[in-house]
Image 1: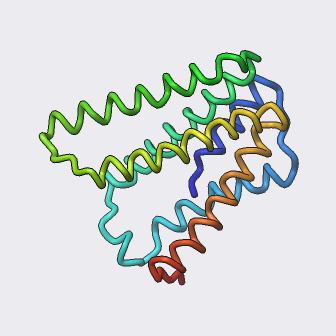
Image 2: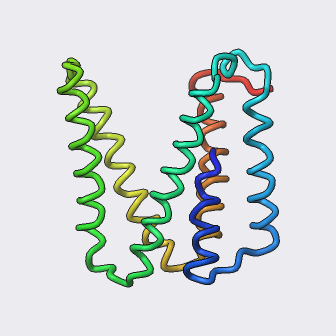
Length: 168
């Protein structure tokens, strides 16, 4: 998936004094080693990555990690009654920024685009509600590691079955 879970885990160590298990620590180290190995592979998909692509990936990992940290921070506030407002603000902001880009680029929006967006948003809202709830049950390192591994496995299996992707 990405190194994104490593950032909130590391921040959790320093801010909330959560100590990762030895296995979690090994996982973070392995993930940190795996990304450069993936980037230097000779795959056709990665051939044109270049310097800008590497910077973009680093930005993606960092912003995703910070987003997960914000969710962790919100749960540490113990304001679960504000969870719907927190999620509404999150998705309203994302929707507003996306709409601004669509209008600025004068993109044509089709009904199917709206359907896909709404369908995806439903899963994102449910996933974020469950994510926030799970953060009340276990340490961020456990939750984020579980999400990363399960997402990677599910995405890989689904892409192999639905789109016939093959991994070497």
